[in-house]
Image 1: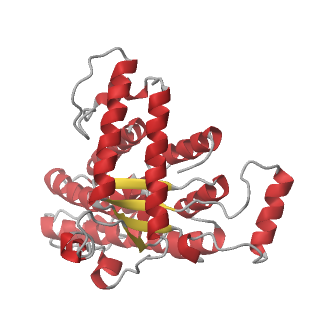
Image 2 (image 1 turned 135 degrees about the vertical axis):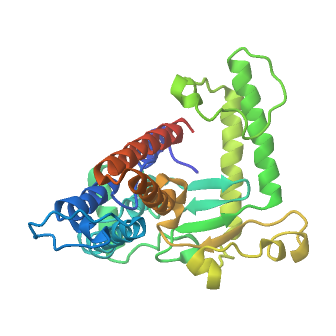
Length: 346
């Protein structure tokens, strides 16, 4: 929302670089797990008759698969959990700023806000509206603005006077969603006209195939006609109107919605059950890191469980921790490559 072309391009490039942001460090965790299992010979405790690791007696007792899973799982969980605590409760709190929070600050000084819809009527809003008069200024003016802000001489950055919160969970109403569908159809028709193709009906969300990015098609240059730019301005105005309408009716998260991300009962908050036929746009105050759920960051703990289960299944079959870990790491490289390219193409 808003912003000149060079600031918008800079924000888009930063967003592309964050497509594969991780909540944990797979390679580091895998190496430490292997160090304990094979280097320090803790896998020996998975045998039916374990011997001390420093013993010179060769252990020929058979391996129990259940014990092997228990020992490996203990190190997977303990090491990943320890790294998470050190990184998020010490490193990002006392040493440096989390990349997701740094990106919010970048949006603020760039005077650019983002609305990210992960589903047709659900997503996140990053409020980046600048509290300063201008964003295209000299370095000295920029430093002076930050100094005045640090001294409390400027209003809060957050939406609706919120001092800390600049990220929101959004439930889009039916009216805005239908309007976006119409604008999307007009955009796709303009693209087909610019490419000299035949203009036909457009189905939202079905203009790309899953692996189309491998051929380079999404990266081809698109020509923006006057009509295309006008449609983009209309979309921008619609989002600005939505944000302004919700500015004085922000809602706090409570209970299961706050702690476990259970969705609220929107039917009784936004729609016919609430006496609103078209549905209003609802904005919930949110933590700064939740908007990163649309990145690989949001799937990382699900991927972590997937890697553990995959390691267990391969290791109990091969009884070889090295080969199992290499296979898991190769799969991680494939997932990172696919998510990065697909995110940039999107």
